[in-house]
Length: 568
Image 1: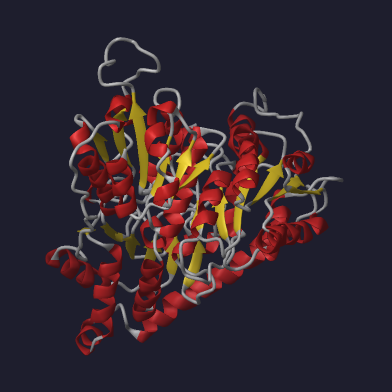
Image 2: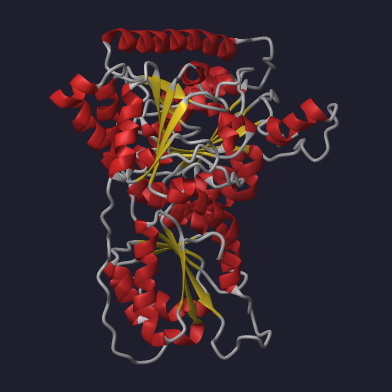
C-alpha cells in the first residue's frame, strides 16, 4: 500500500473519486497523510464521470477507485465514454484475493476481461513486488496515449514488506508528423482556393492547442468550424470562427464546410454521426480533399476517405505550418491559399452565411407559435440561460434531444482553454453533473454548469447533489424538464406513427424543492422571462456564496430532429 501511494504522489495525484471498500482500505487509509483527497460519491459510475471532468479540464490524470466486483463494475458505462473521448482516467480496481481465483468466492469476477476493450493499458499486479512499477506505467500510458487505463490489484497484495524503487513519470515527446506527410499537406493547402479548418476534441484538450489553432487560422486566413460539441476548440467570437457543426449547430458553419475544396481536420476522428444532414442540408463536402491530423494513427481514415493522413501532435503540426506560411518562403509558395482574391471570397462568403444563420436562429428562438402557458420553449430557455452565463463558464452538456440544441446557444469561450464537455459518441445518459463536479475541483475559480434533461437528471445527476454538499464542491445544474425522453420520442414521432411507448415521463417531482431538501439552492422557472435571472442567481450562489444550485426550467414538449435518422 505504501509503495502504491508513493507512486500516486510521484504522479502528482491530488484527488481520487469513489466509494470506500474493504478491498483497498489499507491504501485508502494512507491517502490523507499523502495529501490525496478521497471524494466520496453516491454511485461509482459518477466517480468516473467526476474523474473524467477533472482530467479534461485540468489536463492531468483523473483517478477513481472502488470496491472489487459490484463496485468497479459500475465504472463500465462511464469508462467507455472516457475511451472514446481520449480522457486520461486511471481506474484502480482492487480485486479478490489471489488465492480465491476460480473458487466463486465473495464478489469474484474477471475484472480484466470486463475492461479490456475500453482502456489503453491494463496493469495486473501479479506479484506485490511489482505494484509501483505497474501503477506508474498505467499513469504514464494514460497521459502519453490519451486514454483510460486500469490498475488491478488483488486485495492480499496491499500487504507485506518489500524493497521498492518508485519510478519517475515518463512523458514522451512527439513530433508534428512525418516529413513527407507534412510536405504533402502543405502542397494540398497551397492549391486550395476555399479551404476550411475543422477543429475537434484534440485541439480543445489544452489551452496551448487552442492558441496554436488561432495563430494558424490567422496565418492562412481560413474559416474555422468546430466539430459537434467541441465549440471550445476555437473562440466563438473570433472573426475567423464560422461556428459549430452538426446537430443543433450552425447552418452557416455547415454551408462553409459544404463549399470547401479542402478540409484540414485537426484532432478529430470525424465521427460518422457528425456528418449526417442537418436542417435539410447534406453538408459534408464529399468531393473535397481531406487532410486529417491525429495523434492516434488508428483514427486516421477511420470514417472518411483521407487524401493526406498525418500522424502527429496537432499543436506541433499547426505550429510547423504557421511558421512556414508566415515565412517569406512560405508566402511566396502559398499559391491559391494566400491569394488575396481567394481570401476575400471565402471569408466574405463565411460572414454572409453567419449573418444569414443569425437571422434564422433568432426566428427559430423567438417563434411564439409553440408557446404554452407555464412552460418555456427549449430554444428560448437555452438563449436566456446563455445570456446569464459568464464567458469563462465551464459547461457539460448531457445526452438528449433538448440539451443538444445548446450548440447554437453556447458561450463564446473567450478564455481559449478547455471549457466544454459533451457526451461524445458513447452518449450515455447522466454524466454532465458529475463531470462538472470534477471540473470544479480542477478550476474552482470558474463557474461549472451542467445541462441536463429531466430523464438524465433523475438517472445520474440528482443523487450527487449530496456529494456537492458533503464535499463542499459548489456546482450548478440546469435541468430542462420537458417530461419525456425526447430523443427517443422524436423517433416515435417520425418513424412510428406517434405511438409513444416508454417515452412520456408525466410524473416528476419539483426538482427545485428536492434541491432545497438536499441543502442546495433550488430555483424554478415557468416563463422565459424568469430564466436569465434564475441562472445568474444560481451562478452567483456558486461563485460568491460557495453553494450548489439547481435551476429547473419547465419546458414545452417541443422536439428536435431525430438524432439517428441515418439508422432508422
